[in-house]
Image (tube, rainbow, N blue to C red; front, side, top):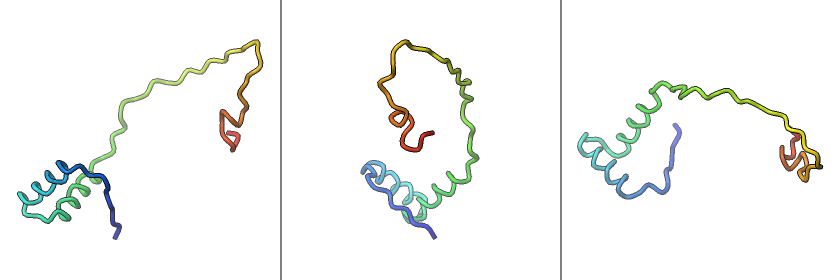
Length: 77
């Protein structure tokens, strides 16, 4: 079984989770696992549709100061 370690949880969030677990008569571990299971069971929403990307070619008169590897990285894509 996989284990997760979450760092930097603000104290108010941790206190609220502990209180939620107490109200539901669960251990904090049980409560966190239930929250994760509920989140994992939610269907993935596609989100809002993004507008299509429009590309435009621009010609300049001067030479570029940028090299291809500076723009695209070392792999040349």
